[in-house]
Image (tube, rainbow, N blue to C red; front, side, top):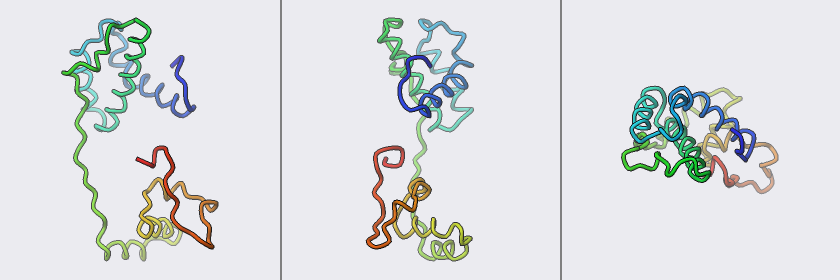
Amino acid sequence: MPGVRGEVKTRKTIDQRIRLHVIPHLGGVSLNKVSAAELRAYIVKLESSCSPQYARSILTTLSSVLETAVDDKRLARNPMKSKSVRSPKLPDERREAWPEALARRVRDEISQRHRTAVILGLGCGLRQGEVFGLSMEDVDSRAWSPPRPTSGANSQ
């Protein structure tokens, strides 16, 4: 997408969402004809083809594109901000910690190669992305404490 700034990976993600998900459904609609009704119909299609989380990310990207069109005076207002246009509701996912017996059983039965990841997750409370992102340089064997998440995808 021309004019998009940021990391290469971010630009590729935005391009992919627009190319694969927005253009096939809304590409034939003139920008000034994208209405709340068009968007509601589009959201119904999205809900049947992808997870609510992914649909919301696609819609956020689309809203940013439409907001840019408003800034550029190509649209009077962003139709994504209409009261009747609502992103898919996220499921209420409450995650429970494993009971201690199950955690110990997984730790004891998993392959030696993956055991360290389980121990870090269980013993230090690290999340999956934090465990996978950990490198030997992050570990001070003399005075080790779990690394604190930095700003980014894993710090939410």
